[in-house]
Image (tube, rainbow, N blue to C red; front, side, top):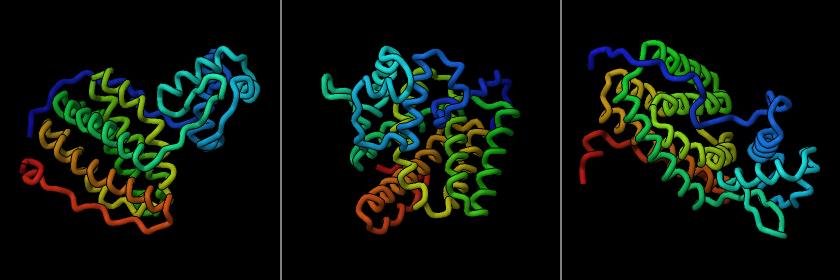
Length: 260
C-alpha cells in the first residue's frame, strides 16, 4: 500500500452533479433564478419532453421578464436539455436510447479519468471517511430495498469523487452532460434490481484510491461503468419497448482489461 500523503482537503462542493431543487431560489439574481427554476421543471418532469413554449409563455410561467428567461434557455440548450428554434419556440428535448448511449460514452470516459486522477492525487483521512460514510448509507439502503434513495446517494458518491480530481475543465465538461444522464436515470430507477454488485464495485474503487494506485482505480471504475452503463441502456430499452431487460455483462478482470 502506498504511504500516507499529506494532501490539501478538497472543497466540499458536490462536484458536477446538482440535484434539482428550488431551495434558495428567491435569493438568486433573475438570470440564475430563471435557470434554476426552468432546469428544475425539466429534470423533475414538470415540463415533459416534447413540450414547446414561446419565450413569452416561458417568461409568464416563471414570472420573470424575457431577458433572463432567454439567457437561461440558451444555457440549458448548451447542456442539451432544450432546443431553441427561432420563431418556433423553445422545446424540451427528448432522449432516444442512441442519445443516452452517446452521452454515457462521453460521461463514463471522463469519470473514469477523474477517478484515476483522484488516486494519483491521494485523499486525506477526512475525505476517505466522508466517502466511506456514503458507501455505508448506500449499503443500508440496498438492504432496505430503497432503490430511489440508493440512487441519490450513488449520485452523491460519484459526484464527490469527481470533486476531488482537481481538474476544473474535466469537471465542467462532465457538468454539461449531467442533466441529460440524470433524466435517463430517472426514467429507469424504479426498474433497477437491487444494486448489490454496485456496492461491491464501489468498495473496490475506494480500496484502489486509498492505496494510491491509479491503474487499479482506473480498472475498477472501468469495470463498474461498463456494467452500469449496459444495465442502464438495457433498462431504458425495456422501459420504452415494454420488454424485459437483458442481463448485465460479467465484469472484466484487470487481466482481461489489458488483453487485446
